[in-house]
Amino acid sequence: MRENAWSACSQQQIKKIGLFSEEYKSFLSQCKTERECIKYFSALLEENGFISLNKLLQNKTPLKAGDKVYTINMNKALVAFVVGKEDLQKGLNILCAHIDSPRLDLKSNPLYEEDGFCMFDTHYYGGIKHYHWVALPLALHGLICKEDGTKIDICLGEKDSDPVFGVTDLLPHLTEKEKGFDKLLSKQEEIAGEVLNLIIGSKLKEGSAKSKILDILKDKGIDEKDFYSSEIEVVPAGKARDFGLDESMIIGYGHDDRSCAYCCVKALIDAKNIQRTSAVILVDKEETGSPGATGMKSRFFENMVAEIMNLMGEYKELHFKRVLNKSQVISCDVTAGFDPNWTEPYNKNTEAFLNGGVAFSKYTGSGGKSDANDANPEFIARLRKILDENKIVYQFTEMGKVDKGGGGTISSILAEYGMEVIDAGVPVLSMHAPWEVVSKLDLFENYRFYKAFVETNKF
Ligand code: MN
Ligand code: MN
Image (tube, rainbow, N blue to C red; front, side):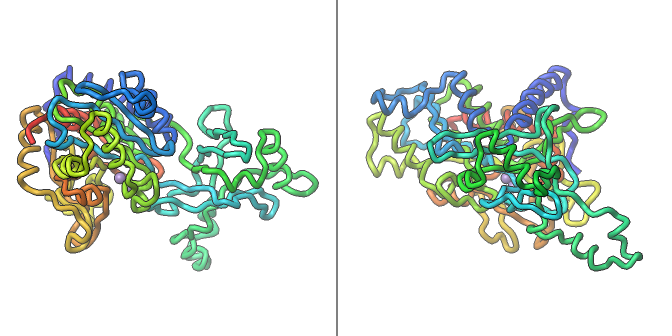
């Protein structure tokens, strides 16, 4: 077991951890989609002196040391920079996190009627356990785009006065093996993705529940065909809350990876005396392998680096390649925390524990380190120095026993530029479940590490 770092905390540190956690809980409760995160972070960056890159490009304003800029990509990804005093060609300090989380998405043709109920058909997103998503209150977040260019924002199920939605479950009386319902039990054990249908109404209009719902939607300016041009995410309804009698943890939806995304943005805003130009990248689609224009595999980040160099009067292809090649990256992502209820897949000696601080994964991947970015010891040694100088609590981890687990992050995509990259983030319990759990102490140490990383010029 790792040392539990709470015992070494002063009253002042505990107070700081508490304040940081309160703000984080408020963020996590408000931001349950990529778009909501981008809206929140853009506003936070603007409040703290960051200027939209588009504005600078329009006015051809040159950039200089100390300037802070940000730019968003299709409202679902973001890059923010603080221009440092050092030569850009020495490379950037980069923090990168994802802001998409596992969930159910509405299909393009979601509305249908079944046995007197009106239903929404869903298609799950990311790695979920299907049985987690039944019998709990769910909310709808997203938007509908109309042909005339107007957008209807949707956030239903969060206010006390809002209705919620849900996928119902079969009662135990009809699923017990001894009562001869074996077939139903096996269906339940592996609840099929296609079964995850949301009940949204049961009132009839002229014998039809769907007609009644269509009427309600019409009042809100929505036609059935508008779902073709919609992006509606089904997420757990409710706020992030303290977890445990000692209030040492937080339960909430989307700690993976919004805990790291939040720490990244706060670190860049709070960092003092930045020497090396620093960047925060927030991306979408990590949970589905980082594809698409808003995922890490898109060229958005490198295009924006080129724009920054151009505004500094330094853009040349060779210089641009050097900047990317010389950069150092923290792939900010959560990892599995050791779970006292489910010890079997873990190796206690090599796993991350809650309250053990920032969790570093030298490599991710699975099997024989397949598809892993394996961080260099030279890089890790420099990071250890930063950690020790700032008295940051940290631990090194694997994800499960050898050949029992594994997973990927965006680290290997950034490593393709020839950058030094390592994964570091917060250990999580119930990762990828509708409600995940993190430690407040780990969250704060994670923020402190990211801040110390962007402040360093030791590379
Ligand atoms: Mn993640
Ligand atoms: Mn994940």
